[in-house]
Structure formats: structure tokens, C-alpha cells
Length: 367
Image (cartoon, rainbow, N blue to C red; front, side, top):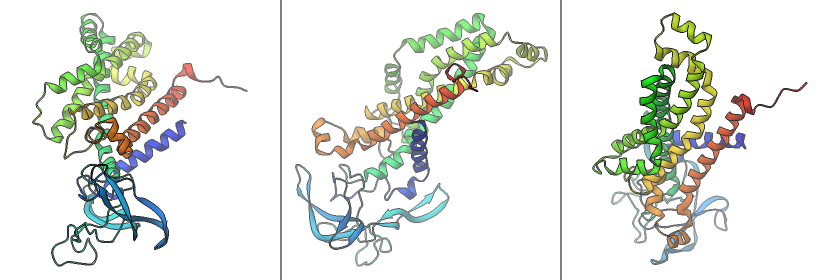
């Protein structure tokens, strides 16, 4: 299970790094005649034979959003197909995407969408859009859910790592100093930590986020969420570090460092913390999914990432509005499935690291 979890995390983070190439469209690309469309990929038709392809559909019921397939109108899905221009990692200009079609996208009125008047031929050379491929369906605005999941992973997955890094730094500094000095320093830091611990984390996150201004752009909201999650996440780890530093500071190697005149903060970070690195690694592996879920909860409640930026939580906020909505369009839950897979994967990896690094969980050597 741990090996499978590592593979899942590698796939998700690899997809995050290559989102522009893997996603057939940008997260804001809309197809107004293809709203609420179910996944449309098929692998056989009498017209094209075997191979990945999509069949043209038209909307026949605007209330239930039911589509009818048009017989004889199939479009081949090609690997390394031309698409919207982008810069891979902000450096390399490209127009090739992992998959897509090259057939022009003609709307219900017979107009090539996105193409200047009088142009024809290859839709990208003419400035138009290619016929859409919705592997995971489309949302209420006709945006490709797969593309939005790939782009949204950048915020959802990055927040977990950055928030853990900041909260762990605070925990090491504050918890290490509390355990090293003791006395009034220990009492003060622990009372502050207990204040954050006594208040339920979700309520504190919602309070801190709600008192901030709503007039923030996506970048400011991203930074604010990271700061809030970091402030909420450090106390538990700080208490753990404080107790372990308090028990280790009497060891001979610490006394030797003190005799050499090394500053206390340097002793804590370079001499004591490495002795408990295995516990911290497990804490990080189990803490990242917690921060990812917290960001998703904030965005789902409308207090986090908002359009035009996209995260998994904001996708759920826009699409998952009622049970009847989910019964009609179950593919709207795909962002939640991605969140579930990442969370379970981190949990299994954390269990693996605990078994490998924690001496109390190691099996005795035989032979």
C-alpha cells in the first residue's frame, strides 16, 4: 500500500508540474454549448474504427441538461495535438498538448468558435478552437474538469508543503527554545501554544479568515491562507519538540556544545533536532494532508481561493451545490476523489515512515 501511495503522489505532483502540457485547455476556457456535459471519450465507431475519439453531441433538454449523440460525427483524439499557446514552467513557449482534436469546433449555429471571420482549415492556425475533449466531463460554464483539476492541484498541493514548512519552522524554534531554557520562557511559549490548541482548529481558521478583507486577489488570498494554517498548525508539534528537547539537553554532546560557546538556537537546530528527525519526518508526512483538507474546506465555504484562480476546494464550491445536482452530474465529484486519493496516499506514506524510522515499530533482526 505504501508503494502504491508513493506512486500516486508521484503522479499527482508530476501532473502538477506539467499541468500546461497535460491539460488540453486552460482552466478558464469555456465551451458555452457544452455545459454540464458528461465524459465523452469512446474507443470505437463505425466511422473511424478503433482508437480514442469523441462523438458530437447536441443539447436536447435544457432542464435536465441531456445530450443526444449525432450519428456519423466522430472526431479522432490525437496525442501531441496542437492547442492554446503556453509557456512550460513560464520559460519554454509551446503549443503542443498531450492530447486533443484538430477538427474545428463548430457551434450550434454553424460558426467556427473563436476563429476570425473568413478563416478556415486548422482551427489553431485560424485562431479558433478545436472540438472539445472532456475526459472527465464539463462544468456549468462548459469548462473542462480535467484541466481545472490539473491546474487546481498547483494551489491545493502547494499549500500543504508551504504551510507545513512554515509551521514546522515555528515549532522547531519555539518548542526547541522552550525545552532548552525552561522556566519563564517555557511557561510563556506553552501558554501561547495551549491557547491555539484549546480553540478548535476549524473554528479558529474560519474566524481568522472571515475577519480579513474580502477584497483580496488570488495571490493575496493564497498567502493569507498559508499564514493562517501555519499559525494553527505549529502548537502540537512544538509541544512534542519541547518535551524531547527537555529530555535530550542533559546529554554529554549538548554540554560539550555549550562549553564551546555555541548559541542555544544553533545547539537546538544542529545538535538536538537531528536526534528527533525521524519523528519530525512522520509528523510532516501526516500533516500535509491536513493542511490540504483545510484549504479545501475554506475554499468550499467561499472563504478561500476564488475565480479566476482555481483549486480543488473552489471547484467543489462551484459545482457541488445540492444532492440533486450530484445525482444529475456525478462527475462534479472528481476533484473530491483527487483530494481523497492524495490524503490516503500521504497517510500510507506516513505509516511507512513511522515503521522505518521509529525504533519502537521496527521488527527485531533475525539470524
